[in-house]
Image 1 (cartoon, rainbow, N blue to C red):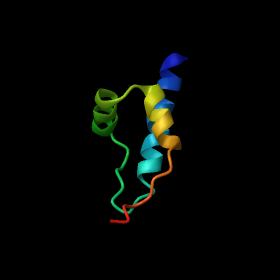
Image 2 (image 1 turned 45 degrees about the horizontal axis):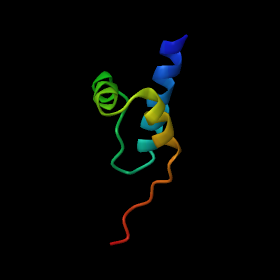
Image 3 (image 1 turned 30 degrees about the vertical axis):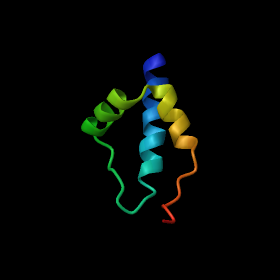
Image 4 (image 1 turned 60 degrees about the horizontal axis):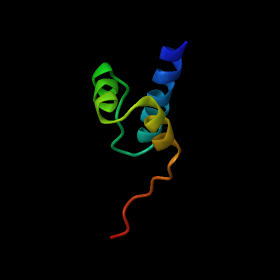
Length: 56
């Protein structure tokens, strides 16, 4: 069941990324990239962060 939890963290982060106009469609390659950048727990936390466009 741990594999299910691991994947859900990345899935939630991908869902969050897709709320932006440029988006990032779910794909094996995207999940692989995210797994290299962060673990599932970190991805879960990233999915919870507020993301706003830069005001510069």
